[in-house]
Image 1 (spheres, rainbow, N blue to C red):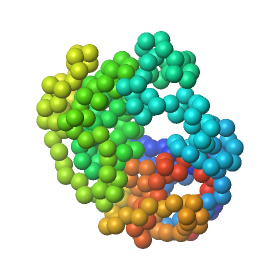
Image 2: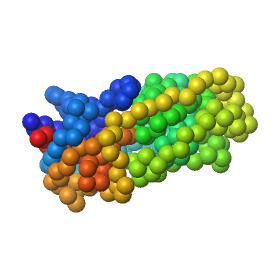
Image 3: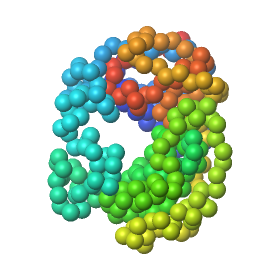
Length: 264
């Protein structure tokens, strides 16, 4: 069976274990059903997620010209403290920025390779945690806009990590942490503007990933360097496919790539 289309990040369903779906324009694959099967991935070309042209992908699934033009790739996406819609100030497209920035956001702690702080829209809980490969997570504050979440994250980054080590996450070298204790310990560092939004009573969310075998020395698959790859799928964690030969493929990191995928 062969599928063909442009890659976007896998859709997920919160269950035990997490269910993963690779979405194409007219079809989808439940990737959990492909565990222990041989998969062939062939690189065909590019399709920018904005302009749809066959141009090399620069970042986040967009070609270079789109990346520096569209609001979906503005700096405040990665650095939410740069959000200005609450001030009625435009960056690239004020209507878009108001829709995204002026909605409830959550600052959270997630444990994937280590305990880290992050920001996401409330509507993206727990999807964001799943995408990061976190096996446990907890909300710290829920604020009405992206700016407040951003300045809270910046303040907390002095006391807790803000990055995930993808190799450690994929090797499953994880230690369970008491995130409630972390939440309470970090409360004192929350900015005054966001302190009233602190969540004083909640519990951890736990994620179970469909992995039969974790890699000891994960090696990342680059479709530019290896346009044809074949391997036995052994697991899915975060947005990575894990293969028997230690190869791992970052689906989200390959958004905008056109591939064919066959199963045998």
